[in-house]
Picture 1: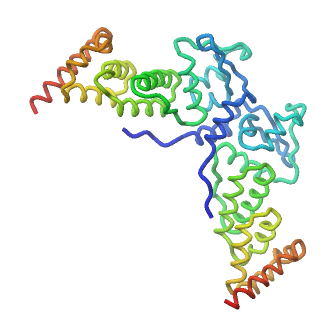
Picture 2 (picture 1 turned 90 degrees about the vertical axis):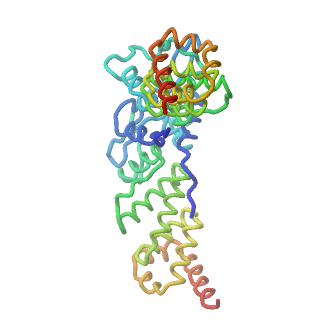
Picture 3 (picture 1 turned 45 degrees about the vertical axis):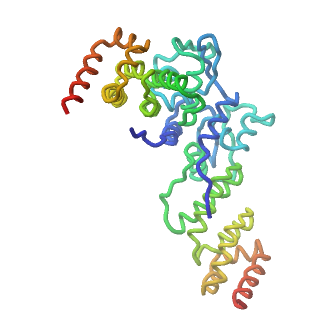
Length: 193
Length: 193
């Protein structure tokens, strides 16, 4: 007889949507987001230290401030922590930007698997318009596989002119100028092969 | 690039073993077992009502009494609720008895998938020594597929003599005598085919 597949993630997703038993609140850019301390601590070593460690926030009745993050990114982060999944409801540049923000958040809270999921998603979505921004992100967050994929894209296709006209490229040139050398190096090596 | 498989169940298993954030205690046959209210409520409608409903236990600092259940069964039940898995460390008759107890517990707490998992496991492990006990359980808990598998086993193989000598058969005959008619019916229909 057949047993239906695991519904753990569905139950925990419901638990996140439902208000029941939530015992910690975050103030994310003025928006109040509530969650369960035990789940956050089970999933993220950073939350574990923040909520249960010796440096824990004294009064968990008071919302914990989360700086430099949009509420929708924090909510997606929570969704991942409860379900091990990320949603796929955005398209194109929006999706790419959302995934970049999520990767930054994953890195901040020590969510290794989420970081890899974002990295894989960004690898699949590389295009001329976003590649420079993605490359800067990969450099800043030490995502070697994503960085390699971006460098290979720029060097192997006839897209460099278009890439250099993007704002992302200006940002890349300003924030990680040494990556430009790596691009040049990749192009030279590609030509000599 | 490859993303490793979901580790949600591993994290929640660790959360169950770890004492952190547990906010409810059960007294199971004199043994204290602690857990997280939000997880139990997310997984079991019975716990949801007991812990968060209008009939909820007043003082969750006081251990909640769990009657008629061995601590090891309650612990296995908790393990399932946190991980969607059951352990497989027992063999033979012990394993069969443990699975039967777990099925009873699953039924009591409304864990539909666990009930099906136990039912499937018992279907796979039917033998002459245990089949009568399993059949009585299937009858009492309305497990139609398990009941059919037991009836088919008894009727189709040359085991009835051995089965009738087991204590399980005496228990079956005393508690569900009408099932004996179903066994006879199955044998008659088997012979006429």
